Length: 328
Picture 1: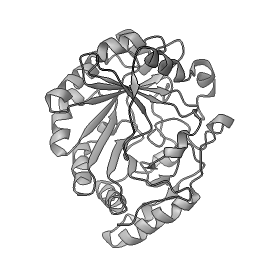
Picture 2: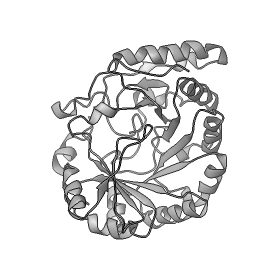
Picture 3: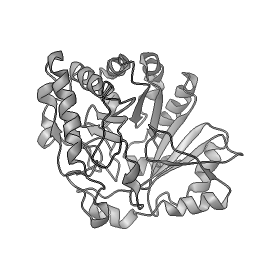
Picture 4: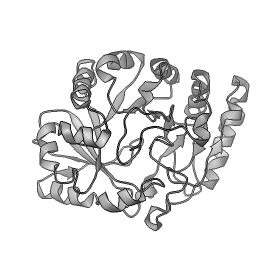
């Protein structure tokens, strides 16, 4: 099996596949004015058959983890079928989704039956009023019910993503820790990242994850080793807590050295970096099963263009206008 490798000897086992740009939340740091189709988003999103072909090509190139992203992936009516299509690849051992959670209470058992192995839910505050203010949706209790439903459906651990924002939630660590003390939840604080649409918000609310890391270490939390197909989180555990804490710190030195993931947008472009300058079109090779070899070759060849690091420190956010654009 050929392994996807770039010029810096980084190996890629992890595909983040966006299946829609559409989202029904209006998070302040992503889509504060709601979803508005523009540019490439006016094209149709990848079909079920195209998703089947693209995940097969990655699986046959050594990918063993696929994360379905958006927008909000569950807004696709065929979302359960998409999970099942990815599951057809025996080489794919992990199928994950990042969701705002609003449909979990209703559908999560069905997703698990289709083959979903892990869930990340976005929750930026445990205060229902602040949750409403950040997301534009009064659905806090609905999302929390969805987490309960996921545990009932058999998921042993849930990951919860919280974008770290100065003056909004960066002083809420103790509330979050109390929440995960008896719950098998990996709470992941993600540093606010600058995007083309939100420069002013970034300057107002960005704070380094070091603030949280220092507090954790002072309280006896221990950093855990990183597995091959893990995402970029630094994971910490504590013997008195069932839950874990993860920190995603893209502004930290050497963040890109362990990169193991590639992204495909909802319209079929391969993105070598969330903050890169352009995408490599793949959709012309997704029309039939006869083009699988050519598709794999184009993906592998494209890795020669992957740069050693992003350029966020210089304020260069590439073509990413907002985090729903490529799926974060």
